[in-house]
Image (tube, rainbow over all chains, first blue to last red; front, side, top):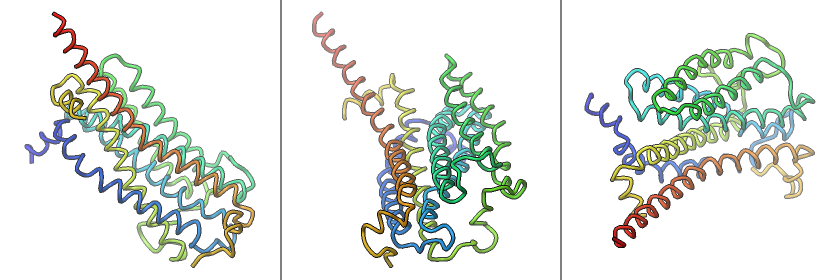
Length: 245
Length: 63
C-alpha cells in the first residue's frame, strides 16, 4: 500500500501509466459524446412545455455535474498535496482548475441560452445561478493565485487553502434549488428515487453524463501530464522523451 | 425515431434553433479546445527541449 502511494507520488511513473489510458479515454469520450449529441438533438422526444429548447439539457446538466465534481477533485488534490507534500497532487490541483472553470462556464452559458426561450431572460440573480457564478470565480481565483507566486510550494499551499475554503460553496449550490425556490428547477436526477424524466429523454442524458466523465478524466490527465513535463523539463527522462518525438 | 419531418425542420427546431445550436456549438468548441491545448503545449515544450539540445551539441562541436 505505501509502496503504491510512493509510486503514485512519482511524476514519471504517473506519466508512463496515464499514457496507457489516454487512447481508451479519448475513444470512450468521443463515442459517448457523439452518440449522446445525435440522440439528444434528433431522436429524443421534445418536451411538452419547453419544446426543442429542452435539448440544451444534454450539455447543461453533464457540464454542471462535472463542474461540481471537478471542484471536489481539485480541493481533494490540494488537501493531499498540503498534508503529504505530494508534488503530483499539486500538479493535479493545478490541472483541474482551468478544466473546472471551462465546464462551469459551459454550464452558465448554456443555462443563460436556455433561460431566454424558457424564462424570458438570459440572466437572473437566482440562488443556483449566483452560486454557480461564485464557483466560476473560485476556479478563476485559483488559476490567478497559482500564477502569482514565485515559489511552487507557497503557490500550491495558497491554492489548496483557497480551494478548501471554497468547498463551502458546493453544498450551497446543491441545496440552492431547495432552500431558495425561485426560478431554477429542482434536480432532475437524484441518487435516491427515480429521475423525474421520461426514460426516452433520460437515456441520452445518461450517455452524455458518462461521456462527460470520460472527457473530464481525459483532459485532467492531459493537463497533469503537461504540468509534469513542464516541471521536470530539466530531468533526463523528459529530455530523452523530447529527443524521441 | 427521428423527431423532425425534414432536415430544415431539424435545423429550425420549431423556432428554438438559434438557442439550441448556439449552446451546442459553443460548448463543443470549448471542449475541443480543452483537449487540444495541453497537446499543443506538450509539443511546443518538446520542440524547445530538442532545440536546446541541438544548440548545446553545436556549441560542443565548435570548441
